[in-house]
Image (cartoon, one colour):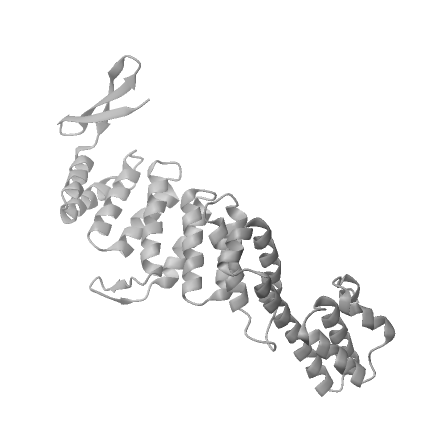
Length: 328
């Protein structure tokens, strides 16, 4: 059933609006809706690109009804926020949108207020600065944009708006080279929105963000470990796209070599401190976890040169199961 609303004359208190609904027999007039004339006037001012006039009307109306149970309060806050937004004062508009979100959760204006905050957040994380004393845009607002994007996901979980906010936040972190946060955010997206049309994009970005988080053999290798698992999953889910995006065996081998190099560097560190037992454990772990890597060959050479390679260790080069050694 569709609806059509037509404005009629106004009185001193309320304007009467004629409402029609589409039934089987055609458009049928139903009971009129009562609309506050001040809000109708403010809406008209906004439509006529007169946000200043709308603000004047709405400020007076909200002062009068702020502490009442007037049913049009959420609409008034939304209109005033929109008037401030149209007046290029998006930061002040947030106060009105927050009033709706915190006080009128079940109102039709609630999702609209959350959507307005999402749009403001996008502008902030893409470089828009806040006004300083309402005059000059010199104050960075990216942290506020981040917070707003997180709030959108919390306030409307599972919604398309939350999906867009999650992807926008992941892209922001990726764009600003905060790859650890980007990897986490894309991971959250993949889990929360498994049926999204953007899942493939987020999964690919998650792989590259994890790889980018690895800074060398002397640093944390958790990103490489995660990337290795993600590459295998991506290749299984999207074989054609994996080839096109370069998520191939060659990339998996590079990740494997880098992880092996990390263990080799750790073993060398133990050797420099004459801790042969820890070095041997690390080298054997390397051979078992990354048997086909160049680092594994060097690990065998080090163990042989120091007399630390016993016969049971040699077959490890052809094994891929690390559970026994990791449990030691």
